[in-house]
Length: 274
Image (cartoon, rainbow, N blue to C red; front, side, top):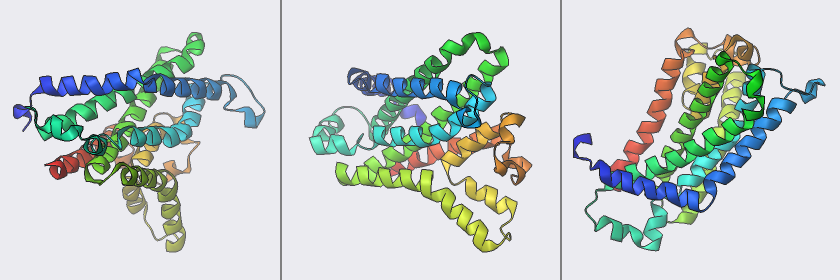
């Protein structure tokens, strides 16, 4: 299937999506939000303990993880919910399909263009946020922080894939926006509450293996685990570290599951779009 893709068409469509986000200041706005939050958390993340100032990259990342879990999925879902249904409502989708470009190439171009916009805003934002602290960061800190930013992009790609799937299925933009907001509430706010409720109701009979497997059903939890097991100091800040089996604390295993979250909704969207 990949051999039949005209990558020049994908590149042109992806470049258009990316330029549109640059033109409407979307990338700049998101980058500014990330930069402000990163800088504020780096300096004020431990204010509740009566301390102000940079306390190390591990503490900063632990604080940023909770923030990113709320912001990045919402931004990704809002970014992609009208990628297809919006074109359909404007009547431009029929014009696009009349050209020598396949439906798969359309989806790939839009997804990669939106991913580029999300990735650039994330890297610029979180990079600029810690730029004033560059003199206090060593090579290990920079590597650790780069891993955190990369995992945030991967989580964004997973939710962007979900939003593209919704955009293909939805009948109009209003319904698409409603579904994407519902997905954000479910994965970011409701899912963990349901899981904790199941643990309480089971009175401890829910084994750690089952609990860990259920966590894999939420890309935001996978992102949390990727960063939780990145250092011993971060692990001590989360109670989940004591119940996770060793097989699901490996970054490669968690990264593979996140990749599945990226690929599976996109493949379903491709199937429905045909």
